Image (cartoon, rainbow, N blue to C red; front, side):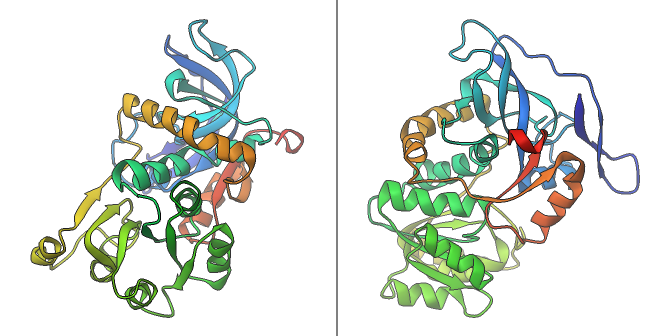
Length: 330
């Protein structure tokens, strides 16, 4: 089968497209004929760093495709259109997916749209509700609002909690898109200190919840933006992972709950339960069209390096998709 592998035999790791044996599905798995896979920053981290997230030489943690092998004990059958998280191996014509975390693609959605859902929507759902405990009509600050997780989080916060959403981004085009998705307040972090804008938007009270993709470079401004007893969920380190000085008393004084999380290294059982709850609670909104996956661009699998570079340059609004199929079947 055609697949992408990470070749680290040279001076720096490279992505290469080649032929590999088709994977074998276990008793608790589905074998998926992959139509579309999606690019995530996790894939870039795995390629560039020795994180140990996956022993699979083929990157990719989410796919959309057709079931080609399924045990009769599963609720899925050959021919079903499914999407979901895989333990690596997504950038290939065939991938193994645990049946417990597979989700049927709504009839109105394409494979491209299906591939744009699992990782970012499950991450957004987990951070907003399982970890962030977002309540009805609370205020949430979502950084990187035009990213894949950001666009998912804006919609989930508005539709499920009727929250007041404050989103940051670096261009007017991205800010406009965040507003169209439901953001109540948008802030161009390149043009003004976002903590001052947050203070103005919250009557100087701060936000109940922060979804932080940035990390170190936003530390002080996030600390100023969160209210007493606020929750702060760290899900990315685009702005660095180390701080020279941390005022622990400031965290204590505001009684801040700071939680760091990553979805990819979580257990199979955790991902299965998260997928099950998400499917039950959110897929009806997607089927109705009130929540939608956001597609930035689609690249053929042979252009996987271009797709990664597009993400690394932060040019995308929403998801970057890799296609394993012909144009007619997307």
